[in-house]
Image 1 (cartoon, rainbow, N blue to C red):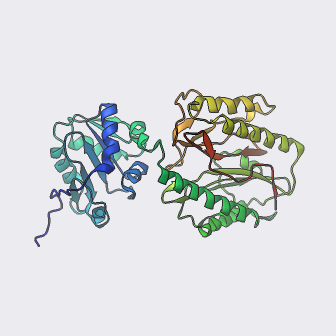
Image 2: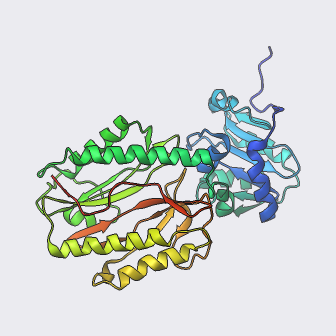
Image 3: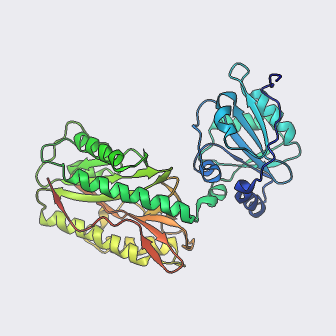
Amino acid sequence: MAARSPLELRWCPLPDSRLEPLSHIMHSAGLEAVAIVPGANFRRLFGVDFHQHERPLVIIAARDRAPLAIVPNLEMPSFDALDFPGEVFDWLDGDGYRGAFEAAATHLEGVRTLGVEGQTMKVFVAMALAEAMPAMRLVDSHATISAIRLHKRAEDVAMLRRAIELSEQALEATLGEIREGMSETQVEAILLRNLFESGCDGLAFGPIVAAGDNCARSHAKARPDYRLREGDALLFDFGGSIGGYNADITRTFFVGSVSERDRAFYDTVLRANEAGRAACRPGATAHHVDDVVQCVLEASPFAAFARHRTGHGLGLEVHEEPYIIRGNHRALEPGMVFTVEPGLYRAGHLGVRIEDDMLITPEGVECLTSFPRELRLVG
């Protein structure tokens, strides 16, 4: 068989139902085409993902023509497994990607607007598109495109349930191993081991394991030189993942004992968490849920220590729509999954956060997390 030029067009005559969500997006947003790069939206459409690196990989779907893909030749063995239903422009390292973009531009002649994932696409990829297609206007359509993940399917929810279940098992196992005098990094290592031993196939994000004053840093890093002490708060914000779907759980414990002031601090966050979970239901707005939570915190003696919104959507990304914040009047609808995670942070002393993962159902709401929230002593 003759060798194929790396820029040869190929047509794979397969149904493109996987791309149907993009058709709805283009219609509703008035876009002529949309571009997808490796990331959460790519995984939602095709069930697999590729790394984003210096070799651009882009899929473009247009209204009135076959979809196309620009693919590094190095990735072709994996990309072929997708049975992509369109034309593929692949390129070799020695040639560079400019020619593939220019060839794709010929296929897209006449297209004037291209929606791109503004929070995902790298700048150099956007520049390559703009250079090859100067008559085309790139539009940041990140929120519009990502709406394909806003309502979780039954299979998505099943993956989230499993990721949460295994993460909770790992946390319980970790608590049984904690001892006063351990460093934060030692505790973190135990948690990581238990996450993978429980059956998680990845991490939602690098876990936060923080004790004492470090808990007051909402995105703290574990310290190798700090040892757990009697009365310390110990905060875990973490999640395992299954098939790309992420758990996100936060629980705060105390080492050995807890002062009455710290108990009151904790109880305030617990009440806010309870109020937020109770406020979740179909038709309620993201604004309403956050307002209920913030009102609990603002009415407490610790109002000055509240720093952030109540939550965020959860799925193939750890932070996605819907964002649970005052001013967001999006109604909560069946299939939406998001966190309720109030927190209080007193710099130099402690922080407390309690986070649960919520699913809106046709009947109401389900809390996917089940790990106990009552104050617990460890070590």
